[in-house]
Image (cartoon, rainbow, N blue to C red; front, top):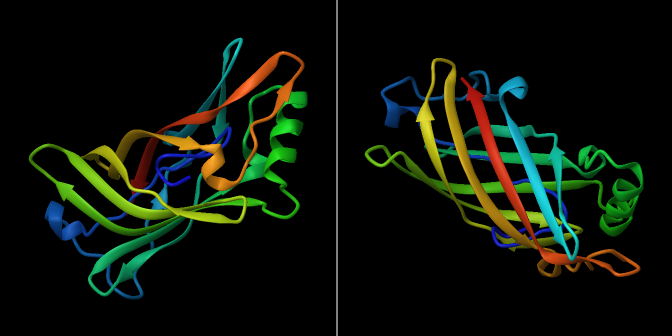
Length: 189
């Protein structure tokens, strides 16, 4: 989804940053990696159709999150099979659209992060890979320091067509190309 696109789900949520910005210890080579706090994090997607809006949830995991050459780098993985709308028939159609046997994951690879401590905003630069297609996908979010680490909140719009996905439909119901992604990610360090 380059922050402007994706199909019924996703994700994108994630960020990385140098703790020195917050006055905390920097993550050094060999130190523990940062971790998403699953009980306090969520990524939701909303796809729109001619009749209604459907919400779903995505499971978030960090496959890689480490310091690279003085800046942070993160790779967030969203298993497509873990995208849930809580309707089995709708989920099957969504999985078929994503061709999950061939493309089992949605991946966001963060390439850079710019933080503005005064405004509490973060600009994330990265690439989103969905359905085997990778697009540049910048994301803006609000951030705050918490007792455990950092919290990022924001949203993005993903266009299914940007990832060579055709929105599913059934009879007179047509799913629109744009999918809203809302995230609230808590990270401990």
